[in-house]
Length: 321
Image 1 (cartoon, rainbow, N blue to C red):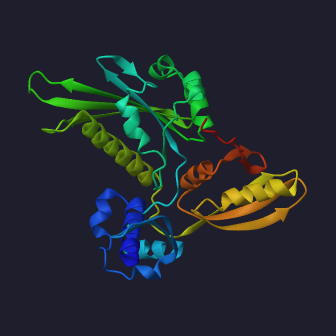
Image 2 (image 1 turned 30 degrees about the horizontal axis):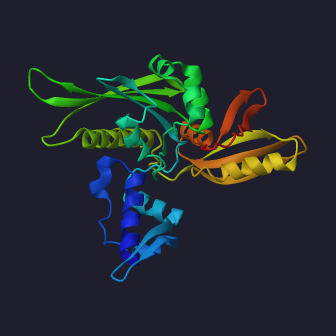
Image 3 (image 1 turned 180 degrees about the horizontal axis):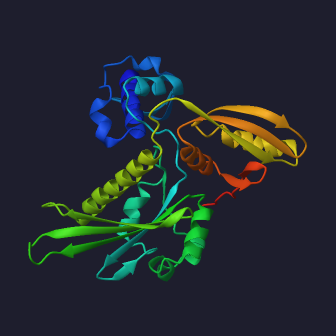
């Protein structure tokens, strides 16, 4: 059971790093000695009865052997983890638009996606009093960037997607469809709209259709992220940065964040003084991908006369209540 669990976890890992179009090129389950890639595993949520034993198996893999495998197979992959994407689900029904209401089935479906593993974490607001006072229906429908940005910051999210869902009856074909209209808001680009239409299958209920629709949206989000961050070779680039500091803790905080950036392979300290640290970051990918990866770790780059300045933007935590 442990071996089968590790095999399945390895397949999940490879699929999360690569594009859907390359799935058939991945090693099939059982074709490799997965134990050579496993660095550690743990067991949690154990449940026993007189007839069976259930538990959750958490597996950690060695980064370099996994990278080497994909490079050897010439399969492009991404490894930069995105900041959470905050989903604002709005359901349009005969009752009108629903956002925070308990009857919003679209929001309930997205709630089950919250916290999922992979390169892109999905986050959905709790819907508590702080959320409802921060963003109302009119602000969401009117694309009021102030409240949307404030809510995203509360959840330490990167981009925000306002996702509208509604069911429609086609009088010509007699078929029913689910329309999902997504608008993605980011600090680094103009709002990006996207429309998805799914034909309702025979005997498919509204909840099942919404679940299928959410799965399609998640796959689109993941594929878009991976396409932007594909690493097709392991050749290193080098970029120099100046990190302003006022105390040793400032440097240690930045170093901790840099260690979270997977595309940074090595941190080379060039100068260490009372007010600044100069480093060379050895990284894979291109400079744009490096900038994207740094932002996911709350590290911001500014261009000044002396060179590139790297700042750590600290964010406050979030309480559920």
